[in-house]
Length: 187
Ligand SMILES: Cc1cc2nc3c(=O)[nH]c(=O)nc-3n(C[C@H](O)[C@H](O)[C@H](O)COP(=O)(O)O)c2cc1C
Image (tube, rainbow, N blue to C red):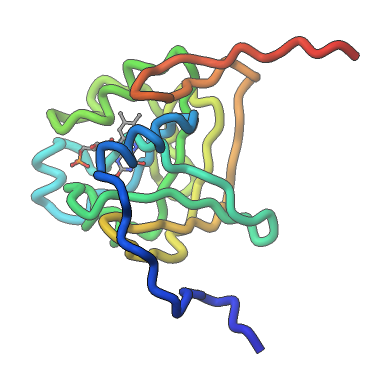
């Protein structure tokens, strides 16, 4: 019987025939949404550094995994200063950004200052920030983590979620930000 818990192939891959910048450019062609992860700061050093009891960072690696149970995933670079907090936090919130939240996206992608100081948010059921104006939010139990290459894949079990009116989303593609322009298909 094949175990579906975690499968890796026994056949070794060939070494890549490309350099990392080439790979990054190919990946950048894939358009994604943008989200901000919010979680509890795990240690005093991080609290002091950001001046807040929370950590937050911009991601584009969010994706859905399962409907039942409700699971999502996203990945975090091993060198992120947020890694200890995100490993330790029992919960995190994935805040999906709208097109009019580019400033928030940039604030939570920069390493400087208290990212929450000028940010409007409310606290959800577990006490974590849900950003005002987010297109959708997912309050997740920090279910499992898988270290792969230079990233950690976080799988979250969604305990609560919500969404706002169908505003245009923030889209990231080829290192540029934009929004969607839906096709008007004939009926
Ligand atoms: C559009 C966009 C998407 C990003 N997606 C990710 C991601 O999925 N995973 C990740 O680890 N970093 C991602 N980053 C980078 C982090 O936001 C940023 O490097 C990080 O917050 C820097 O601070 P830190 O060292 O405190 O983590 C992204 C940045 C931008 C602008």
